[in-house]
Amino acid sequence: MDIQHLKIFASVYKNRGFSKAAADLHLSQPTISEHIKNLEFELGCKLFDRVGRTIIPTREAEILYPKALQIIEDLGKLRDELSHAGKNIKGQLILGASTIPGTYILPVMASEFKKLHTDVSFEIIIEASRKITDMVLNCDLILGAVGAKMEQGKINYLPFIEDELILAATENIIKRDTISLKDLKNIPFILREEGSGTLKTMERFLNEKGMDIKELNAVAVLGSTDSVKQAIKSGLGASILSRVAVQDELNCGILKEIKIRGLKMKRSFYLITHEKRALPNPYKAFYSYLKDSKR
Image (cartoon, rainbow, N blue to C red; front, side, top):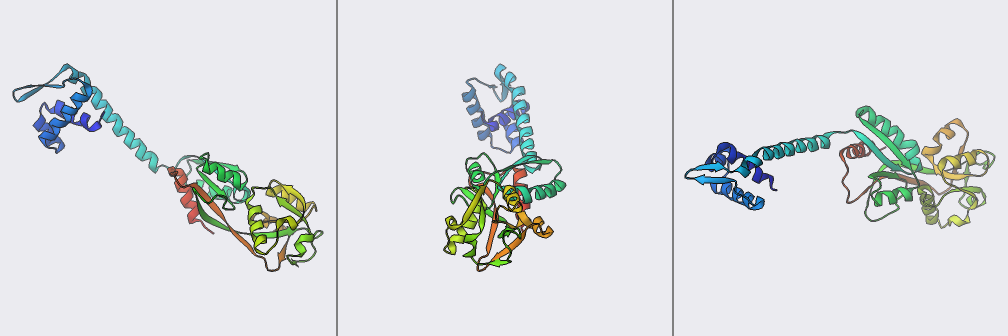
């Protein structure tokens, strides 16, 4: 049922006349008459009897009038609620993130955002970049943060944090501070699992230098950055990891950074969204906050 029909009907009923309703609504009298005729056709009943220049509401109009007013009022309230909801920044934000942004970046930024918007809460799902990308692609997540571009279609990528991959080890595994790319093949090496953004990025940089990841002396494949760090600390081997992830260990001297001559591995972390999915207001606000907090 057309809400405009109901508004015109209510005005005609209240004013007991088409001309008064036309003046009230700033419409022409023929327009008023046409709307009433269409409403009568839609409802299958007559709403007004015309006696000379006077109109008399029928029994059906008496029934319809209070209900029409209620519908008009409810629709107005609904519009107000939707408008208010569109401006509010509150509720739970469920974010997906690969290991590095999910462990070391998003919790800090979520805490800072919550100081500005106290009515929000966060849940951060941490999976490999491939899994998070698939979840956004399948609309299981609205917003994600990953360390590599896994999907070239249907996903929007926005760089928001700069990072660098570095070779990290203990003094017992690598005594030198600088090695060559060829030396990398002789070091016991710990790899991240398939689907990891770190693994994909490292593989891309090595391929650009003419080196296949299969040439590395892999002693373990582990499923998280923390497990790789623990394995390095225990002396199992060395690994290429995010500087963000090992900064504390580097500062404390628990791990050391070893330079690889001729190899710099800079990368970005990306905010990802589905290209055809609109961000609800709280997500839009957090997305803008992350975008404006680029570093």
